[in-house]
Length: 79
Image 1 (cartoon, rainbow, N blue to C red):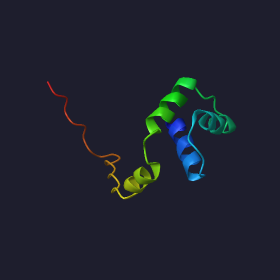
Image 2: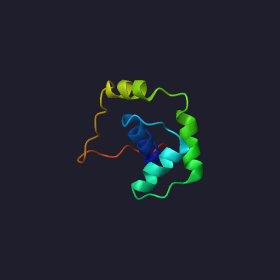
Image 3: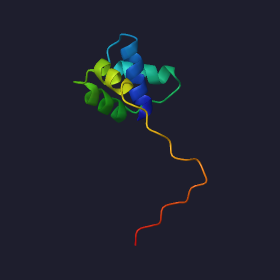
């Protein structure tokens, strides 16, 4: 799924039109094998989305803090 979103973002950044044939071409040119159902789903999901606004909004969000790598104890399971 991320591959299809990445293809759509690449097309957007290049100034292209996000449609089924372009998404398939980007994925194929990158060495992938596009799935028609996934391509249709992503193109349909992004149809009415203003990608520039979404990217701008995401860039302004604070980054999540990472959990400690080690040394902590695991939470107890609920009983």
